[in-house]
Length: 79
Length: 123
Image (cartoon, rainbow over all chains, first blue to last red; front, side, top):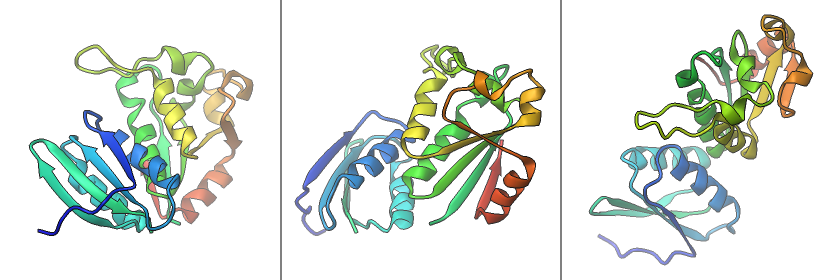
């Protein structure tokens, strides 16, 4: 597996449930510049399909993801 | 940009049905969709001034949040709220009785929105 990219912004959404991680992610990405990377940390059990669906529809790609225990981490680059 | 139109018929007598269309609409707005919610049948009772602050969306542990929390999230992301006159008449409500963020439309405008939307989702 490739190394985790460096993130410009980290969003701690641990403990938040659907749809809050996605709502917070969308708001945070709006504040970022193009090509910047956000690291989203989430524990919501639906986070993997939800982040994938959000990414597909907003065209902001997930460039890396992993899971440490119950924490899913997503590195997303703003298009 | 994709367009989604939600139809919300639930009212104050069914608090468990009150928030779901609103937070799904919020999520759609977070996905860069253009989103509206049309409150009809009993839907407008949820938007009566004072109701969102006092209606608690139930949760198994008794720690539910007020409906206002879900409404504010939706409005914050640009979700539009619509009602039409006959469903206000059904409950003896006028536009002035409702929270300020609601827009009045008629049946023709609703049908036009439905025809223009990519999907219409009804609750």
